[in-house]
Image (cartoon, rainbow over all chains, first blue to last red; front, side):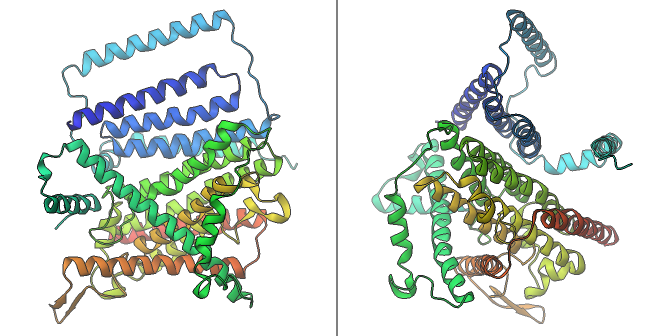
Length: 168
Length: 374
């Protein structure tokens, strides 16, 4: 029994969790169930990041997607509509389109992986990415980083302006 | 000298197997890792349960003392055996799931909430050697799992299919989300001052001039303010009075856990005390020197070391320091609860957005300026 086997066990566990919860997100007729299943999808992705040695990315995935986006989705759903929510059933045409789009994305990802990362080990050395990331974000990529945060700030102010009560 | 709790557990297993006459090196690696993981997890789980039980008793004793009445004092000395009586009572309680509830999510919610409350215990250091995982992300990891708690609470509120529960869940989620901002700012202040996110390294940096090298005193105006920001935001995040609107009895019965009973209710109760402990322990680690002081484990003056505790004694002293500080901060939370009335919703928003967030930003900017100058 070696660490590779442990990693394989964890990988297949996470993969099963991801596939099952994704299927629930896509096929569930209740939007609330879909939303709660999304929690496990996002956690499984965080698990994959951790397995690949991207520790900062894994924790950020939990903070941003579970703590931010999922909770916002839940707020939106639970506050805006009556409790049991049933989605419209998808038509045959939607399924065909979805399968085609999924196949296209899969093909694209396979090409990228084969072309750029062929022959590299799937699991890199286990060391913290924190310091290297910090150096890159506040050094080489300082401008894109600050630009992204400025854009987000502008979007935030814009949203606050749009929902402001008009007192005039 | 072993580095982490897992190493110590491995060492203990190795010695124990050696006594029986088995060679540790021949045990498969996966079994070794698994055993160490299980024991570390069990130890922390046991610790959380004991802390929660103890504070379940202390809460009532403190309440009695502050409100000039008795509290539990019949069962055992000082009513201490009341804990065991309570535990037995809880175990034999009927487990009720409302007929109109969403059965699966109703059962899942307490587990998610407890997962969120328990996850930070992995990185909490008790002494220089006693820490389950010495993650370099430390405090970032510890704060990230509040997200699971938020989702779990909304899930409990929705799955109960009860308006009070849903309101309680929504209130708590909104409160936790908004108070994460000042909490993060206070943590960043310490991160900027010490240059680490690793909890163990943050504590190691606070060694030196007894209590005067704690972050509170070392980074005086900024870290001092940040400590109060962190503690108050943590108090709000663990829904304790005066911030217990999510379970305000006079308005929404018991909030998101109105429909829960027996063991499932106790899991919520356990997570509340676990969150309180995490907030207290993080305050102790980030601002109050962690396992350093008030009991010293090194005596040094005139530039030379006069006495230094051995590895076992210094681990013990560290644990006493760390647990003592955490328990004191938890006691302050109990004190708050039985002294102050509940605040209103607008006051909660006011405190977060107009007091704690600006204060946190000032602390962060001040600390950054300090870090630039030195």
